Amino acid sequence: MTPRVILHLDVNSYFASVEQQANPFYRGKPLGVCATMSQYGCIIASSKEAKAKGIMTGCRVRDALAIDPNIILVEVDPPKYRSTTEKIFSILAEYSEDIETYSIDEAFVNLTGFVRSFDEAVTLGEKIKQRIFSEAGEWLTCSMGIAPTRWLAKFGSDTCEKGGLIVLTRENLDAYVRGRELTEAWGIAERLAARLMDLGIKDLGELKHYPVTNLMEAFGIKGYELWANLNGVELSGVQTPRPPKSVGHSHVLRRRTTDHRFHEAVLMKLCEKTGRRLRGLDMEAGGFWLGFGTTLGGGGDSVRFLERTADSRVLFKTAVDIFRQQHRAGVPTHVAVGCFDLASVSKQLSLFAKPKDYGLAKALDEINDKYGEYVVMTGSMFGLAKHHADDRIGFRKTVSWDVTALDKRLMGKDVGLAIDHGPELIREEA
Image (tube, rainbow, N blue to C red; front, side, top):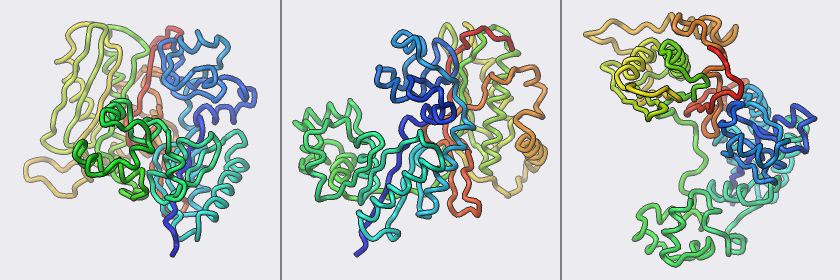
């Protein structure tokens, strides 16, 4: 009988490795990829050399400079990472039609039926690594986990040596998890680990052999999931892409000012980006929310539309209304917008409202897609510098992949919340 075989691939220190691949002078040196070049900004990816010095993802720029004044800092470059991901995922698509894009640098590949054994899967995994080395970049390394379940495959790639490959089966699983800390498991954070330790479970080996009925008494269905994951019981399988439940964008303002024209220009840009994503997904929103922070606090609210929409102008008007009602004091420091209750665009005509016409919006989308972002823009955004609410990229669910498409290209559609951080080190005008 052909075994069930799942491969999980995780490219190590992805954004930083791509930057080192693109610039040989960065190789072998501590490097941090920043959301923005700000002392208060956040490092969203560290090279292995930076991690060796204690500069981890999430570290503030000023803290990283305190640890190593010579660290190389570069600003995030989303198109460069998407392009590299396209190369990597096009390689994966040659070996299976069942691929789950977990994030921009991670994927699950269902090899069931494509290989006859775990040994063949290892041979295939090594071949994929070699092709990534030769076709995507010799500075890119990836960790791989091969297992009969999705969870074990990711657990393997998360815990094996960086750049390594490990096979986990029911035969070697006991020895592998024995003595490992609870938080090494995918899905177990500090709070859950503390609750497990209250039950007398000190490591993953003990969790694996703990009575499942006792776990379910303590945690409900979550208890069964904990037991099943560590005992090689498949719960989900490789997941096909699903429509997002919400879309949105946020931005930490690089210019701190009381000029509401500037704030509204940023809001327009965020709403336009959100509207474009809705239209690109052929979806409409049933509700909208705005949140913002100021030097004296913050505010925000959400509203439901009487009629679903993907019109950027409607989103902008709603955002401005909420902002004007909620902002009472302080200089705005960050803002976030989002749409929820998403559904596919309905062709049903309303008895009480005019038919929705996205013709103009989609025409403008096509022009901007062809000639560059914001070649055509609304008057509200006129004069706003490009770096305000610019293109950003997140860690999870930032790509949409369709291996059945004829060209099998990475679509590069965000379906999560794109986040920007921090004011510039150098004062910049609008």
